[in-house]
Image 1 (tube, rainbow, N blue to C red):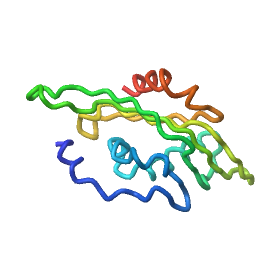
Image 2: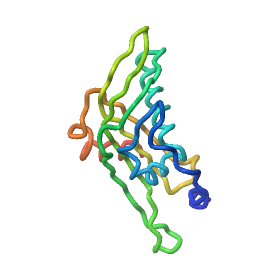
Image 3: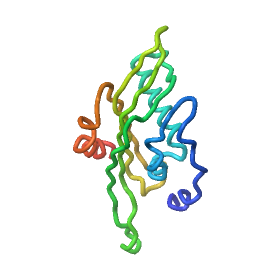
Image 4: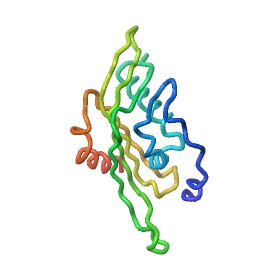
Length: 155
């Protein structure tokens, strides 16, 4: 069962490495693990994949979270006993600055990264996730009600 798998989590990742500085996210690490066992690595991989959709030879050089994350979470009562509450959907967004190389150049980009997951109370094969990378965006633009819209879209 999925709930049992989540009780045996790998040790936390360091909040900073040569590739990333996620100190601003560290207080939320346990929540990020609802979305991936190694969420910092997962974020870096997702961002590099999104960048490669725009430019095939993109390579993420470094990234730093520049804001605390905004979170929205939806819970459901488990049907077995009605007493247990489980997270069914969650979404988070944070501002970042990154450096990416591609096409023989290096670029500094700022924006908002949003990660939403749904069906989190189901086995991993039934879960869904979506990510967004909003270059030049801010949490004022992509947090709050926009995050809620994206959380629904992830379902």
